[in-house]
Structure formats: structure tokens, C-alpha cells
Length: 157
Image (cartoon, rainbow, N blue to C red; front, side):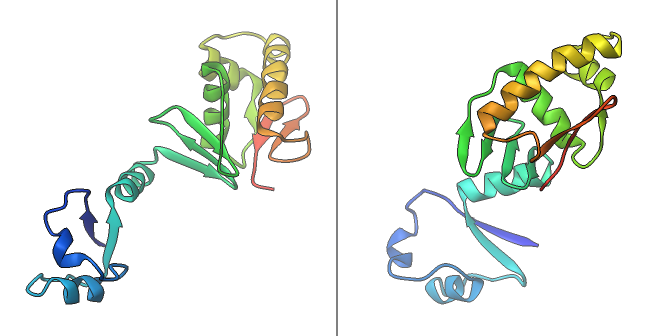
């Protein structure tokens, strides 16, 4: 795919004013002499940054949940959700393994950096999951499910 990024610089703004720039032929018509490559995608700088982040796997999506690993932010349904660092790491790890049961022990090790028994992990994780659900507005039967005795699974309902 070929990408043309239109920045905020106003170098050619006079030439482009009044033109629809939503497709490669429109850009070609607005800027005669510009070589347009096949399958050209046109986007602004912000969209391009998001595109690059998605290509690197830095943006995780599970349904309406979007996790930006670089900015350490999560949104659900377009609304930014304020998470503590621990809650963010927990949600991120579950999203990285969306659709799979993640064991209590794995969560304890990956999120808290500790090794412990399942009982200790289960109690600690349960309270954080409860807080996550509350902040995201989820009930126990949507998105984040308990796999009783094993761990948790994050899935797109």
C-alpha cells in the first residue's frame, strides 16, 4: 500500500483549497504533475500515526475497547477510561490474549511481577477485576469473564 500523508504545513494549501482530497484521483486533479501510485491511501498526520501504531501492534482492540500501549490509555465506546498502572497492565495483558483463558498465576507474574500460589493470586486479581469492570461499566457477563478455578478471559461479546 502506498500512503500519502498530508501534514499540517500550509505549503500547498492555496493549490488544494476547494478540492475534495478523499481519493488519489482528487489529489491528482488538484496537483497536476504529481505522480499518483496505484492503491494510494491518503490520510492526515494523526491518522497516519494511528495507522503506524496499529501496524506495530501498539493499539489493541477488543470490540469497543481500545488500548493504546504507547500512551498507556484505554477507551471504551469512545470514552477515555482512567486506569491505575496496575489496572492498565492487567487489561493490556488480557487484551493481548483476548479469547483465551489467562491463568491466575500468569496474571500475577505478568502484571505484578510476582510468583505466588493460585489462592493468593485469585484474591488479589478478583478485586482488580471488580474495579476494572466498574470503571468500564461492564457487568460480570460481558467482555471480561471468570473461568472459575482457572483465571479470566477477555472476549468480544
